[in-house]
Length: 404
Image (cartoon, rainbow, N blue to C red; front, side):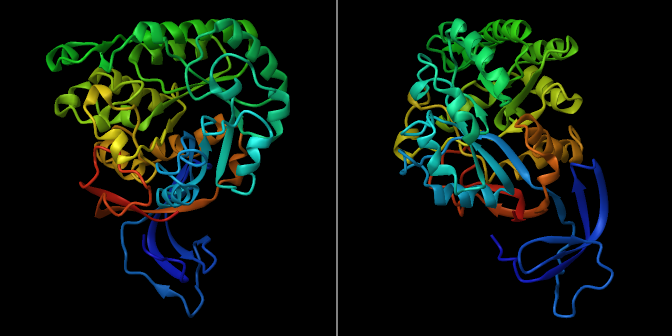
């Protein structure tokens, strides 16, 4: 990443302010301490004038949930490499799921994260994120951004109790709607492409049946709940119905589901093995429209690093998940903004202020902090992550964050 911390002026920059919902063309100054000033009439004499054009300055990005290798899985990702990945991607805040080793399931386990303001740890709902015994939620509450196991919880009676316990704590509760018995041993979305590719299919009801049940619990308890990893068109409908009924729900989609679909699995690339799986083209269109109309509040990275040895196996044996912190903005800009499926402001809001709102963060604390060149090309090899489990590794992307 270019070292831009020498005081520099950039002319005619497109400023996307997700908080005020405005776009404007401004001259901006990058100060030596790494902050941006906008619309200066006369910059200091010693400022370097940049000849870059077509740049975008936007609100710092916020990722609701991603995985850290450290502690416990340092071969996949260290805190240092994760920090660099987040900054390279333009992120000001990243939520960390609790399934580390040890799990973030008690106040002591949160101490590891307290000196790292970039990261917002989620506290485990259950001990060791095993879906069995509920953690001491009240003890965890002051030290975490919210509560989630980062994976499905099948015991609905337990989920009901959790909703009742969490409500007075005023912390986000995040659930993944997924019915493992309906998913069985499937590895991709059930449909014509799973038949053609000879891969075991997962029916969409593995998500929607679970989501419908959890929405009933929200209706009963009135506990604000965020639904992560929404991936089907029917789920978008269910979330829309819940919001129209004034249930306190928000939802997010993982970035991969917005630009690839089940048809793309023709290569059997293990880096496309995801959970939930890539949906069909109708799902993708519904998810994009859900972002556009506000049914889906946020786009999440769900950065999930694996070592080369773990991921370089046959498709059916590969663990689910991909990296993405350094890739998401460039990819979605090309796939959604350039193609006019979303406006620049719509994409930026879904990657910044709206996830911040889902996390109960004060939007006023978000700064204009991400400088992005939508025209710069680069090869996905020089990345900060220790892992390379992405389908675009070695390929050329257009669009690069210049200064997070």
